[in-house]
Amino acid sequence: MREGLFRLTACEAVQRLKSGELSPLDLIDAAEARIAEVEPSINALPTLCLDRARADAKQLMTGIGGESRSKAGWLAGLPIAIKDLMDVAGVRTTYGSPIFANYVPERSHPLVERIEHMGGIVLGKSNTPEFGAGGSTFNEVFGKTRNPWNTSLTPAGSTGGGAAALASGEVWLAHGSDHGGSLRRPATYCSVVGLRPSPGRVTRGTVDTLFSPLSVQGPMARSVPDVALFLDTMAGYCHLDPMTFDAPSLSFSHAVAAPRRPHRVAFAATIGGSPVDQETENICRDSMRHFKNVGSKVEEIAIDLENLEDTFLALRSQEFVIDRELQLQRYRDQIKPDIIWNTELGLEQSTSILAKAERARAALYAQFNDLFSQYDLIVTPGANTPAFDVELRFPEAINGIKLEHYMAASTLTAAVTISASPALSLPCGFDQYGRPIGLQLIGRPRGEAALLAAGALFEVGSGLAEQVPIDPRHGKVPPIEKLI
Image (cartoon, rainbow, N blue to C red; front, side):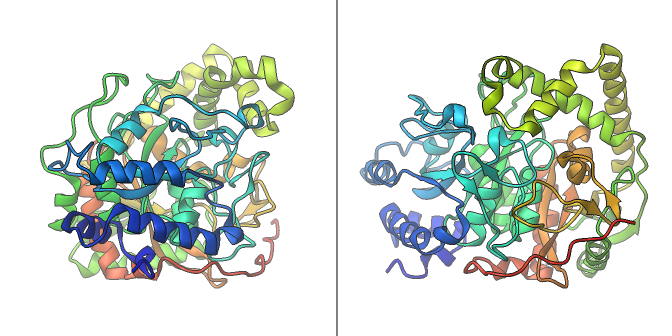
């Protein structure tokens, strides 16, 4: 019975769970079999908690914990993956760091508690870079995660484990987080769908950066309707997070089921001069035909921003100081160089530099606000460059421009982080080497319903959601780009 169940969409699986055609135990068995088959090739879910999952499933099947059955986002016992940056009670949680290699929390993060209260069954923890910092998913505890489309390539970071697990059929839904693109780039690299919600849409629980809008939690899945379902599960007010607000009266799943086309769509090949791979740009521009086919008017625009990289690094580094300064004092020899660099950048920058970045952030928000007075949707490439060698921390160059640090490959997504807009990453094609290419759809702040609806219309036109899950494929690294 479990054969082929991993190919169900999350929405299909939940419907069968609700009808009684399947039980949560059936899906746990199916996931376990699929993980055993593909995990050796990709290393996406290094920590499993199958006994815990089965115990939770049996409890749910007796009727215990079903108080939310009538709510939008009810998962009815669907197994899901939680990124290894978030505590799950009784389950090894390492944050990708040797400092916490053997840590087992006693209590789950508030978001995990919410997901479980909504009928989600935690199956395991997805791999992540150390403390989520990195454009490629590897750490000293569990090693490298590989891209199912070509195991010589990276799935990106930092939700690389979740993206790879989805693309290969290990789970139906994956939780992730996003600061500079950690939900969006892995989705693009693995040809799945990732949503960075508006700040406050989903609780961040107990982090020290509670009053910053940069880092958010969000959903990842194989299709837009599945992402909408998982966002319904996650969204809502949480008294532990001062930025959160109530979920909408109409569910995100409802918005996707009856989508309205965006009347005016703006396509921007880049933002603020961020370098973009030329073939990626061409594929993304050509894919705008799917919006035109549903009657949207598409215009190409330029989004000019000054000092984008400096602005984001200043703001990001300030958060690294909050999160990592004390750890550096105690565990410096166990923390990777990228984190030390980003933290020390924050420690060394002056108040004047930070103030300049805040002024630039305010100006960028105003600029995007003006664009949304003209357009319903802004679209860019989903990543600056396609998937690169799994052995590299970041690509050496993009479109002939040398990169100086790992964040330079994420400035396209980082710009949208600063804007406080929700952004949806979804597939739009493949390059000459078979690497997935994706789009970044940007909506108005708190405009996830319209954003997801637009994504659903595009997805139907492209048909690309039907290409996953896949069996992991072995391949070669494409030729390294030469510097100009």
